[in-house]
Image 1 (cartoon, rainbow over the protein chains, first blue to last red):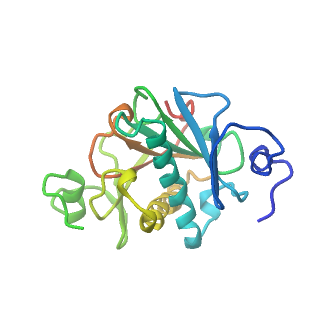
Image 2 (cartoon, chains in turn cyan, brown):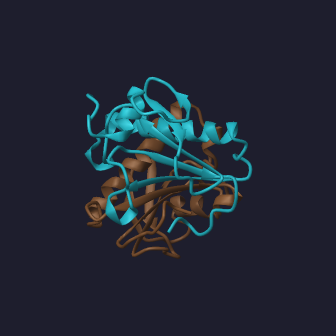
Length: 117
Length: 117
């Protein structure tokens, strides 16, 4: 899928905007959130420009699961797998999705409060 | 994988504890959270007893992605896909994981606040 020329996360994937990348493979890239909400706050995004889960079919299930398993491995690397961490996918305005490129937040490093609201 | 006899979510899967089930297939089951944190608050869980992402290998990626895509379809059914929704996986104590059976929260139906902390 072609990158979206107006998408800041596509520009990060392309290396056109610098970011603190912590992991990359052929399907996903992970980097530090520039405005962290927790001591550990990473974003895991697909290399391809995808905005919404609801546009995806079963062929994308492995990609979404891969994002989660990569996040879990990064939690181990960051030393927060035992203390605990939260994975979050925000979709649309009520959730405050800030960038129209699917992204999974990995949050941890201290108590995170409630369920997630 | 055998159900855990001490797990409340395994008991829901087995039908031993009643719950407001909204979706089921051979891999996952979804039901209303009994203590909702948002106007729409569902849980999507694997039929098999799994506790942590970090114990999983690549063969489980499709299952985790399937949970997310089922949640996205439920967001459509609940009429919150346009207004927005949040998917959350809590792992371990800092995230407040309440039941040791992997579960994905689907939250929506109104503004959810911050990223998720």
